[in-house]
Amino acid sequence: MDSIQIEGGICLYGQTKIQGSKNATLPILAATVLIDGTSRIENCPDIADVSAMINLLRSIGCIVTKEKEAIVIDAAKVVKSNLPQEEVTKMRSSIMLMGALIGRTKSITLDYPGGCIIGKRPVDIHLMALRRLGVQIEETENTIHAWTTGLRGSSIFLPFSSVGATENCILAGVCAEGVTHILNAAREPEIDALCEFLIRAGACIEGAGTTHITIIGVDGLQSVTYRVPNDRIVAGTYALAGVICGGEITLLETPTEHMQKIMEVIRHLGATIWEENNRLIIRRLQTIRALPYLKTEIYPGFPTDLQSMLMVACTIANGRSIIEETIFENRYKIVKDLCAMGADIEVENTKAYIGGKTRLQGKHVIAEELRGGAALVLAGMAAKGTTVVENKYFIDRGYENICADLSQLGSRICVK
Image (tube, rainbow, N blue to C red):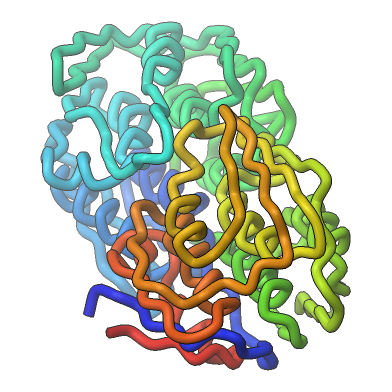
């Protein structure tokens, strides 16, 4: 049951609901550690990374229960600040617990986070930022030990607008004495969601959604209920599936306010896309147009998490496309599998040159990471014949039930 089988070449017609956001849920779950009480987080996706974060919360003393699409966390009795190696090395987002646990217990010990092969994603920016807030850090070959006698507000300039480092600064800053300024902060919608959650809990934060976030430390936070926004990357994945396969699909509960660049690119490809009563409708009846040039960028630019799916679309486009990856150096891992399916792709440094007009052929392929795995599923949907995508567990890290969702859109897809 660890592979996905797809019968390709079928136009899509139907509708499906978009799940809660993975990238918003994980830091918000980490933030519940700062609350000496109970938090209720609604619209949480039932995915592997969320399960791993729940296990981490339980390991430090939180009582966590699941209620349909909600997760209830009682963090009143956080008793540990040492995180178990097995869970930390599964998931990159375990690093979010650094700022939260230092804010709550003044210390943390953890292994270097894992879960990612698409790029280096170093934690040095996180550590630099925490040091600016008064945290002392000792690193060994495999572990990080951090502690403080008291967090102090500071001005922190991030050399790169890292989402994770911005989130860690926010989590530590809300408990610091005085004022914290985060300069060159990330602007992703998930930062807005984290700040909104913390503000509802009593934090004082200004500037979310801008490159300058100001935090005035508070003495404590209170219990809160919060609904996570829907997942713009999952919505983008399914929207691109509609573009790749043709037909007309409807995506329910889609966060279109955070998808403007994605929608712009889809229109350039030749599809019609519009919003109607909280639904996103995608219609593609003509040949896909090539993209002369597109590069991935930090928000509000085109997201790196959708680059692999866009590459699949470009393989069948009418003409030659160029994609430049500016965020993660190993994001082109699916190229060899796409070429095995018949694609014409050449990679030179950060650019991929994609010859279009390819009729992909079904093959046995292997997912090596989350978004690349989802892109291989989309390639199978476009291909002639049967495609089997191994290592389904990578895809499960971010997609609640990709087979059921795409089946509702008309795809012949199943778990094997």
